[in-house]
Image 1 (cartoon, rainbow, N blue to C red):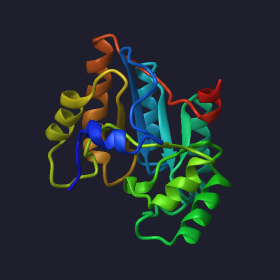
Image 2: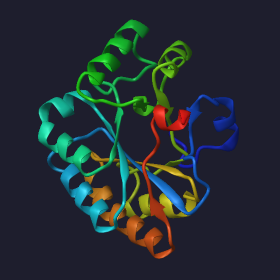
Image 3: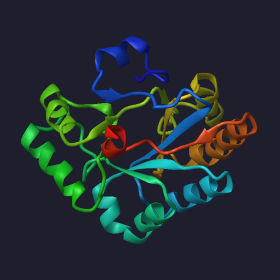
Image 4: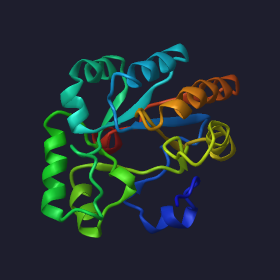
Length: 210
């Protein structure tokens, strides 16, 4: 069970998390979790380039270790990078020491002050500690591309119906999401480009402090 649109009251209850981007203009913030992998990530980069779009990639450390050339391509293309733990750990299912070690392991291969917890799950102490070092990025629109129970058409509708200026939208450059992502992403890029939207990077902590 998950919410496609994060309610305002949830966003207000966790003010130290970033749920929406910093612009209320016609700007969307596309994010891609769980890569990089050779089957999907290069295709995502090609799609973004076609529309002069930028995205933020929350990378799993072990995938970066396995696919360093793809990771380098993401960076060289000017996209933003975020830490997504080394082994895609759920904070709820991990003791704090192990979780922090896993985040640090990812930080050895992913240079970023952005962090997104896998599944959006953090314990209060984990959130408190990580907030000192990272900008914790959540979302206000979850595409559902990872969900085998919904169709690719429903996945597209999840985005089109709920995204608005400033929305942070979650996709996954993963094998699990590949079929839906290949259907949805080009259509989202085309739909919003035709309506005058831009696709921009999420700012890191240094940019936010300036």
